[in-house]
Image (cartoon, rainbow, N blue to C red; front, side, top):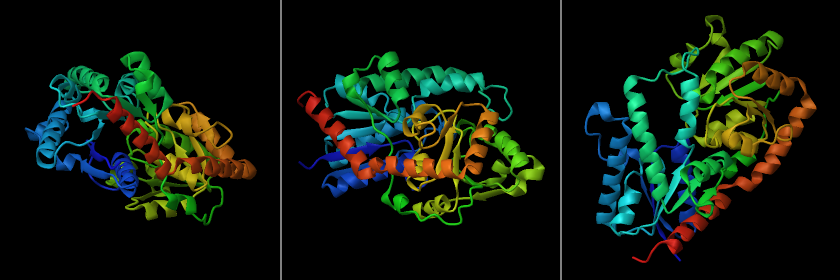
Length: 380
């Protein structure tokens, strides 16, 4: 049966961000199966009430709900709304209370309630973000709004087993209504032909922010370069690059290759020409770049938390290290750089295992959740 699906996410409609890419990849596969998919990204939502409210959570929720209501008026009732729960409040609640009965499947790319204790414990560390006083107040409002919206969605999807367990244990969700669905991989990354792999070329892909563990990458690389001056590091991220360079000691700034990958083809070339993928994130959902690096048969060093722990089996298809530990990160990087056979075995195992994570298979799992939400919804 052909379904009408509405995807709503508080991210720009582009091909660079992980959230927008996720929604487009899932939507594309469902469209290929004959379903209709409409999208509302943040740039299709009404503007903020005031410029200074651009990042204020409740105003983003207002903008999202207004855009959804307008879409329904103009296009009719969708069969299900797949909504990033960050901007869903209070639609799922009103949806139940006022009887519109459009099934809502919420999505979280990392339960924010789990991230805040890390932010607070990292305060004062070199490079860690400060928490303005107003954010301490709005944080409480945001957490309650997120929890409220999550509890009133008909089904919830997340991308890590840790998030799923948190939603069950701390939000009281029915385990049957919470599904962990991993990220997918576009087939082009399986076709990567490695080039110029010497063992000493390292790659980081991601937004250059504290949450990605960039402080610990900087500190680890100084240890790595003392032991192996021949190692090279490429950082694939977003401009401005001066913001990235300022994290590094001045004498090391010229050693960092900084690039922006504006397409999947660009990304594939970076994966192909590097040996070890390094992602020291402190908190994530499940990073798409990690899955893509595995598909391109790169050896991986990442942290033993969140969705990284779901993707990587330590010493089988990569190395897992604790968060906030530059020395452990450096040791793991050097281990893979120097141990050719181990690096090759981890890379090949990763490539074989991730073949089950193609977007067509991931989309089938989402379709199962959407149909379950539709069939479990009260009659309109």
